[in-house]
Image (cartoon, rainbow, N blue to C red; front, side, top):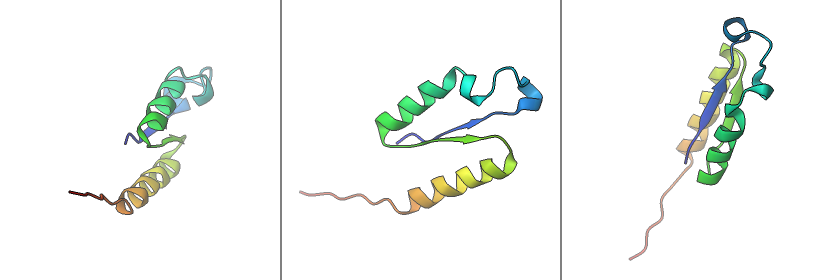
Amino acid sequence: MLYSILFYDSAAYGSVYGPAGYSGTAVLSKMAQQTGGRMFRADNDQELRLAFDEISRELRTLYSLGYS
């Protein structure tokens, strides 16, 4: 599973190319979807923290089942 976080800082990159116009958005989303993970977007530190919390919560609830 691939979990990706698109952290976009408009102060560093300017407001011309917002997160929706960032070319990597579609690629990150597709890779996450194909592997069973998720893609998160974060525009500030608080959203970034929430994304990590959500990923952590999801990973804690996974389990592995085997059969022989």
